[in-house]
Image 1 (spheres, rainbow, N blue to C red):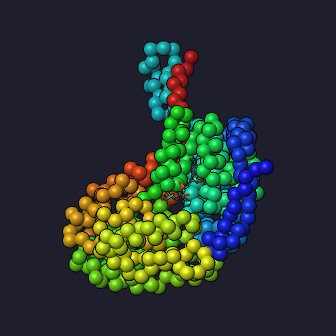
Image 2 (image 1 turned 30 degrees about the horizontal axis):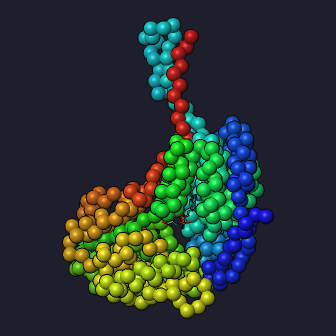
Image 3 (image 1 turned 90 degrees about the horizontal axis):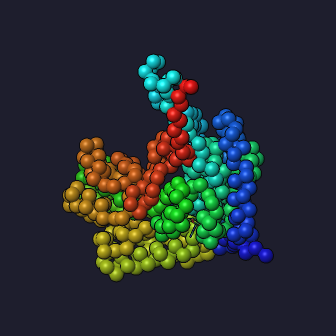
Amino acid sequence: MADLLSIINPATETLLQELPVDDSAAVAAKYNRARGAQPEWAALSLGDRIAPILRFRDLLIERVDTLAALLTSETGKPVTQARSEILALPGRIDFFVENAERVLSPHRVYAEPAGAALGTGTLEEVISQEPLGVIANISAWNYPYFVGGNVFIPALMMGNAVLYKPSEFATLTGGAIADLLHEAGIPQDIFMPVVGSGLTGAALLEQPIDGVFFTGSYATGQKIAVAAAPKLIRTQLELGGKDPAYVCPDANVAVAAAGLADGAFYNNGQSCCAVERIYVHTDVYDEFLEAFMATVKGFKLGDPTDPDTYLGPVSRKPQLDVLADQVADAIAKGATRRGGGERLDRSGWYFAPTVLTEVNHTMTVMQEETFGPVIGIQRVDSDEEAVALMQDTPYGLTAAVYGTERERAVGILRQLKTGSAYWNCCDRVSPRLPWSGRGHSGLGATLSLAGISTFLQPRAWHLRAG
Ligand code: NAD
């Protein structure tokens, strides 16, 4: 009998469902079905592949209430944020649809002028694009519609078959996404969910896949890279971050405090691009801290099914220990705790929103990914000090600068090795811009035109008329 995966509601700690896990044989069977079906899918016209994706887009909007309730039940994501995530995917789909033909179309890059050739005819050079084939999409739980959709939508559109391994903490949503895609007309064998934890993900990587697109932690990303290396396949890794923000002395402090509090605590801090470290110039430090604390105190914590709730439980129980350890380490080394700091005494995996000040870089809270409702705020005396501290990380996903002078902010951001740079905003993703990381934050890009062409491989045509 197959092993069972238990799905627990983080807000109530009750068992929602037990699902049979795909073992190696089941994974291999799914791979074989995908391999068999992919050529026919790739042979369809682009329009025929886009049509079911547009129906999927409409179904997302039509079913948002049910889908959001499911996502909330298994991840604890506040329902208003679950709805926002689902309702933002159609905008990304629109971008992919609008740009698919441009990326996929063959184009002639050279035509020899008539009579110039030594041979009998003229020469043409053409580049065409082909899908990779069967790809694995191993995904995270924190934004299953975003991080999954950034991969499987353009991958399908470009003619690939997708074996989609949702996180074990968002498996019901993964199943719902598959059902919706199939209902919309994506063939069963072209998109298949693969159910299970890391072991199932590892089994998927043992198949002769043509590419792996992974979203998750740096630690797992390293394992994926090692497993994929001998296969010499397209490998894309969207990993964690320790994203810094700096508030300049000339910043609009109210805007900075409101923006950064949301950037740090949205989705309970469980975003790859959550603000994880804040540096504030001493000239505006007190004013900023007061405004920041007032915003955090205004966040409603509680039942994630309540539309007014801003902070729900964390999605994974072990994270409670990570958060408590980071807080304890900081306090032992001299930090001041301003509210929160511990698990709440109630059922569910709730951790009180925590602001730590008088922090420094000897503390894990300023060094390691927190991925929860805990933020360190450090006072700095100059832009140079802020830059040095912002650079002090192996990660490189995003960085933000708040201030009125664009040149100053851009000058600071240029010195940082990050995939995204924000001026007077943070924790923001656009379908038109590439989403990528530097260093331990990953390899490759999703979104933008680069996030479409990554599911293709070019072919060079040398065509000489005979
Ligand atoms: P995780 O690394 O624990 O798991 C990610 C996925 O990998 C899951 O589906 C898991 O089952 C699978 N997995 C685990 N071990 C595996 C193995 N040995 N082989 C194959 N698959 C394996 O990450 P998580 O907790 O799901 O997600 C949180 C992390 O993801 C954070 O670090 C966050 O910053 C990062 N993240 C990054 C982005 C981005 O765009 N850069 C977006 C969302 C999340």
